Length: 165
Image (tube, rainbow, N blue to C red; front, top):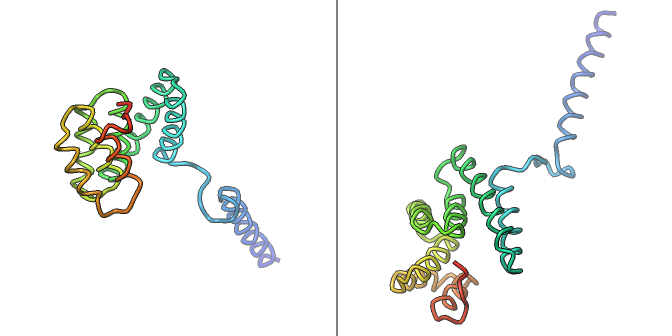
């Protein structure tokens, strides 16, 4: 009798654990539905870029501010991640703080000197701050990447594509 209750109890525990695990997975892929601060920030940045393209600057700025706060939290939890520093530099630059944006980019390059996004965005920052020679150095690093970041930075440097800021 005791064995039967014990077996039932154990089975109940196992089923509870499995149903809780199933409730937190995403379509059976085993990934959590809870987004990280970094992932939330990326979603907000995409939204900000859309508002920026439509000329809705105030809405874009509010989103960049929100994304920046999430990225700062993410950087505190998992410091010195090149991708996080890239987007910290990006949001900081978009908010007009070129000096601190540059610091984030340079810190990211210390971790990953060939980071495509950082090299492009840092190059854009250099163009906006009238340091074309430094922008061309970033372009040189991207030269062999066979990526759109090279083309975009080249267009910004050549003046065929304007960098908002």
